[in-house]
Amino acid sequence: MKITERKPTVSNWEQDGEFIQVAFVRDNGERVTALYQRWGWVQPPSKVIKDTLNTLGKGPRRVVGRQG
Image 1 (cartoon, one colour):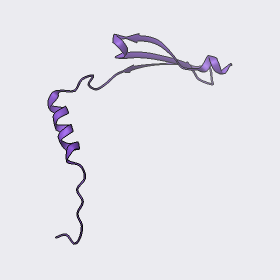
Image 2: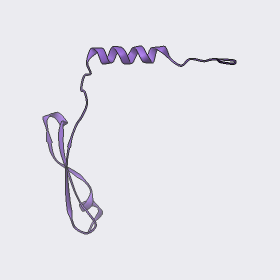
Image 3: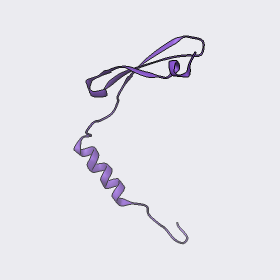
Image 4: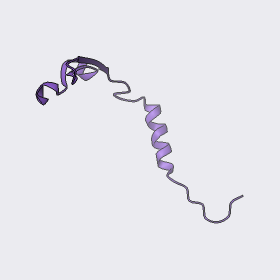
């Protein structure tokens, strides 16, 4: 079997990439098909963005000397 025959290919693409179907052939000749769904936010809620930027803006804290 040629290596190009085993190369994974996208056989279906729906809803602007929210769902894709990928197929490839294994060494033993078995054809494998997988369905993937994009998970997560395309645009996160503004509160999540605000909280994340607030946390990142605090930066690391450096403590010198004995603590406690």
